[in-house]
Image (cartoon, rainbow, N blue to C red):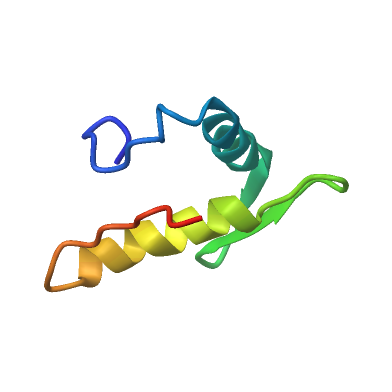
Length: 73
């Protein structure tokens, strides 16, 4: 979705962009033999932003109308 410009990181807030990228880089996965994947992150790292982004991306693909996320803080 990044390559297709469906997800664009906030260019005005470099710290936020780096935080999002860091969270994405901390995610690890294992493919299970039967089927599916198991996701985790190393101790001392955070995964909340990565999972929030994943849920927002998934929600935008299943929504009937476009999804727009606005920073209001």
